[in-house]
Length: 446
Image (tube, rainbow, N blue to C red; front, side):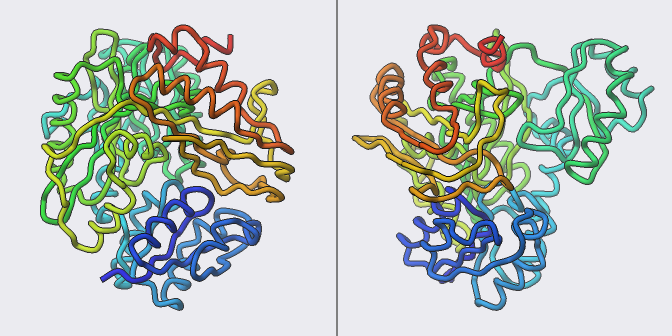
């Protein structure tokens, strides 16, 4: 029985998990770096412990310190949130070995699906459509050139252990491939301590569609519909929405069924998502699976009325899903904007600093997930996302209008943010008409 949870994360997601635990009458332990000693999640948790210096590698990625803190404070479970150790199979395995429940899938599944080339093979064997590409890792330039010629350019070079849109390189011809092959391997080694890469055919101007799933330990799997995450810059999402107006009901049901089948094929447990790329002809291909809670989970919660974080904890506690697929109903439309501490006019230069004034928007079906407060100093050591603004309404157009209103009310003085840039997107005619793909933001910035 889970009675105390340590949250191995920081910022808004740590607060989101603390709130879910408190509503389930579960005690919480916050961990924090020296840079985060005044962070909001530290004050909201029942207990808090410092796990190291500001550097992520010495604090939020420090498995030894986190496990020691967990044992010292007698926690029953660890929730990793997203990022940091959330998809680290070694961490999940150590939790299991120390009799601490890891609120996520078993480490073997994280291993399988975290290895992107292995995940492609697994999904192909399960009958999930995948883009043409290498059967596994590509170990030599000669092999890469042969595969690229066979599937035809453009192609994508991807890190085997990658994720979150990092270490992906578009290659348009053989000369480019010769120039960047070793560079991509080096970048993969630096980012993921694994230089192995693989090749996929590049799907030009696709929509990025992902399906949210929940799976319990009894073998029950349901999907919670799709999210359209095509508004992104350099493979990093900016705006997400659910449902996608690009999908028909038939296609939505088909993709949902395939996602459920994929999850069952690997014995998946807890929450996760299957990501697809969809071309202009609405043909879709498996891209990857995230074996963790997603940044954009709130839009799914808005349209399904399912609390994904609470369900994660219940599943980890051995509870059976309390609903079937037929119970999941989709209502209205939800949009999420990621609020970043950055200056879009200066090539999105990060903007850490002190919050001089803060005003959070409100109103019906307006939600703000953040760890900000007036007087708080945003450290420079971590990701620039400082809040998520989520709205819900009956139609997409009404949701867009509500989001614009909410963004205009959001005041974060003392630092630069991307609020005006988000409003520019929301006012764009093509966005309003849902006439966009993953190239939308880059074209907007030209």
